[in-house]
Each structure stands twice: as structure tokens, then as C-alpha cells.
Image (cartoon, rainbow, N blue to C red; front, side, top):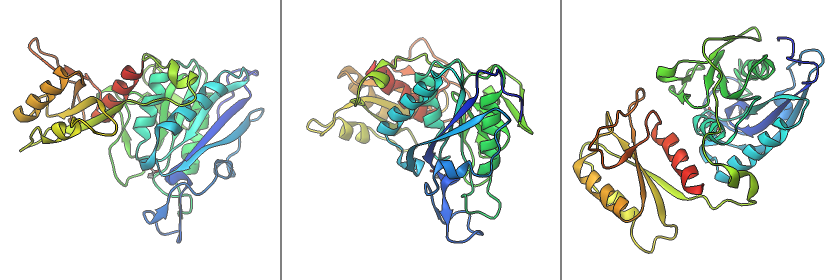
Length: 320
Ligand code: SIN
């Protein structure tokens, strides 16, 4: 572990939300048949030594399988991050999280927190009960990033790599090194607790976020993702916009092919939705690259954002 950045920054706060990192299986040889979110975050820190002079503070924010992540948990997590980051002696915040929606939570926090200190999400692909779990090393590495001099913004640490909360995507169902940052590349690496940075720390907080921190309960606008594919039609969009739906759809993200193209039938339905006042955005289904806008585009595009991230950006825009 490196020396902590200044003698005043004596605490690293570790917020637990569940995931495989906190998962348990009946047998140590079972890396897939486990229940996520079983081990408390304080126990996850059990074998981890903090550098001299640094105190680790554990706080359980949630205990869930991240496929079930809720907006309420996101709001609470953002509020707890903001609370701890404002404490003068806190160097940074680590969040333990499931891998399945990690990129969504990371992008959400990246969007709403303008942090001059680091918020480092980490995870595991093997449960805590595994013969050789990857969680403890990932947590140790994440603490190293939280303590690194100059570290800032929302990052994800997994398998020795540091990803920006804006660019990270889960790209593998099973391997321990399950995340990638696409064209942007990683922010750096953690090697024996030392950070080797290869590009700038991410800058976040560009989207309006005051309601997340001020309101007790946020009315999250309903934004749905509809995919364009061979044989697509306008039926899903039309069904979503049926009058009388309990919660009206305020936004649509179209998971578009290639450079933002849509099946003509889906496009026609989406244009009608836009005319009716629904916010419509195209995001590419491609893993890498961005949508290059064209002069005659009638539906705006989400640039480099994947459909799940474009949905979060649109929800925050509609909230703002
Ligand atoms: C989860 O996302 O909570 C379960 C899967 C994982 O963490 O790898």
C-alpha cells in the first residue's frame, strides 16, 4: 500500500451494497451457484490491513444482487458518498458492488458526484466462499486507489485495472478480468497497491443532480430501452405509449444498429413518440465507438454512451 496522501486524510470509507463479492455458495468449489449479497461489508474487510495511520470505516448501504439494483439504493448511495467525501479526514470512498450492473451505478455516480476525491467501485467474479476468491485483492486494490495522491472522480477497480466510471463496461460473463473501457482505455493499473496511471482521472458531475441530494424521495421518470434488430417493428414503442399505462413513459432510448441506424418501422414509431412529447435518444448497440451525427438526423444521439448509460443520462436530464 502507498503512503496516504496527507496526514489529514486518515479514513477510507467502504460502503457495501452486496454482489458476488459478498456472495456465499454451499461449496468452496462452486463459483456460480451462490447467493449474492450475504456477507456484511465489515466482514469483507476482515483480512485487509490498512496502511499505518489509516482507518477503514465500513458502512452497509444495501445488501443485494446488483441485477435488482433500485433507484432508491442509487439515491442513498449517492447521498452517503457525498456525506463521507465532505468529511475533511476522509481520503476517499470505496463501494463494493455486484458486477452485473456495476457500469450503471458507476455511470450514475460519475454523473451526479462532482468529486475532488476518489470514489472507487469494486467487485468480484467469485463469491466470498470460493476456494480462491478475487474479492479481497480487488478491495485491497480499491483502497490503494482511494489513497493514491491526486486520485479523484468515480472509478472501477477490478483485476488490477482502473476504469473510468464513464467508460467501463462488463464484457465477460465469467473471467475475473470482466471489465473493459473500450476505445477510451483504462485509467491505469494497481500494482502491489501502487497506482500506475496512464490517463487522466475522470471528471464527473456534469448532469443536474440537485434533486438526488435534496429530495427525500425522487420521482424517477420512466425511461425504457427498445432495441432495433432484424425484423423490428413499432409495436413495442406503441405498446409503451398506450394511454392508460399506470406510469407514463417520459423517455425512450433506442438501442440502434451501427452508427445509430434504426429499422424503418421502429424509426417511424419513435418519431411519432417524439412528436407526442416523449424524449427519444438513439444509442448504439456496438460495444465500441460513438454515433457520428448527420445533418439530417431527426432523433438525437447519445454519442459514446451505451443504451444503459444513455438511459441514466436521459433520466437525469428529465429529472433536472
Ligand atoms: C451481482 O451483480 O450482484 C451478482 C453478480 C456479480 O457480482 O458478479
